[in-house]
Length: 173
Image (cartoon, rainbow, N blue to C red; front, side, top):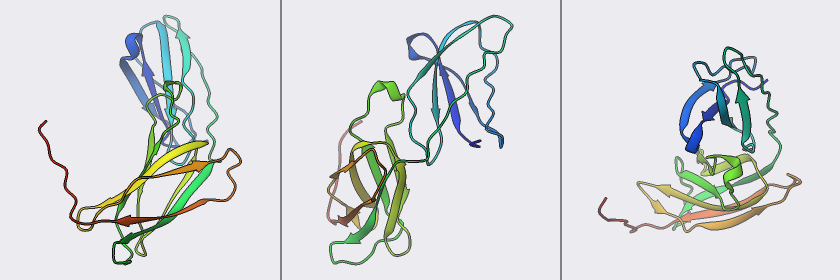
């Protein structure tokens, strides 16, 4: 069982209609939905994104749908350093899944913060290519790098992200 997984129900036109978090037994219940066809998205920290699932509900009945989430997968790990080579703790590292398809719902990226020695780890990522970058308000931004993970979940991909100062982004919204 996986606690704190999120199950999102979407109705016609992919509109959000409800959600639930799993309890300590891995059980979820989305209530108050009218009879109809729904698409379910399931996600949990440290697990692979799951393909979307369609379910049809009937008036006055509870529809049962179970999921199997995998914690296996590839890992990207490494260190974040300043341009002068100093380890940067607390940097935000983001890995965006470049091979994303709408079959996997809204999950597109994983993120974490670097530890005290600048090290980080992003485990249980799906097979494919990721654009990985780091940022720190006090130090700067890194260039994004592409990392490929194979389906065997074997050796973690080791990378170094170097933050460059004097970077600015501006524009109207």
